[in-house]
Length: 180
Image 1 (cartoon, rainbow, N blue to C red):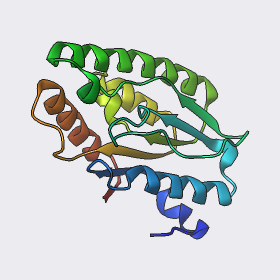
Image 2: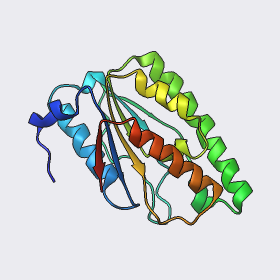
Image 3: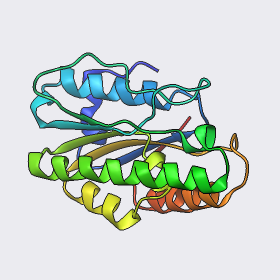
Image 4: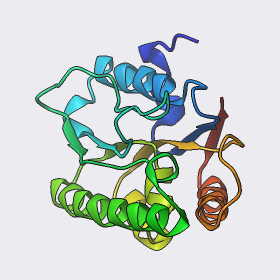
């Protein structure tokens, strides 16, 4: 679905969450919304937290966007714990390292004082991060557009159960849910 610049008001002053299975188009939809906001003149108010790992085994991938000077783009090296972990303990250690790296991005975001936030792949933080810290980040902006994995591709594990629980918490705190 192509989105036109005239629809920004649908998302302004809201928390929008795009959820779905791997490869369902969550990041593509997020980029479409980002482009809509840019075309509408909001670039200087936008921050992006790109929490996705580099693509591995057809999963993940940073947002495919061209750099724009006015937009604050924050990202860091992220592992794909369930795909790269050698066992449950190693998977958990990778998820914890991701959470620590992402929290450093949270600090930079707080200092920037942007009004509109795009988050790519919030689940990478929810796997081992502190939900209240993520909630605080969302509370610092007027508009948030977030995408997160919600599916069945990955087998049952403590990490998956935690991620599902915190994703459900996030769903309950968002105004608009877009399922892919």
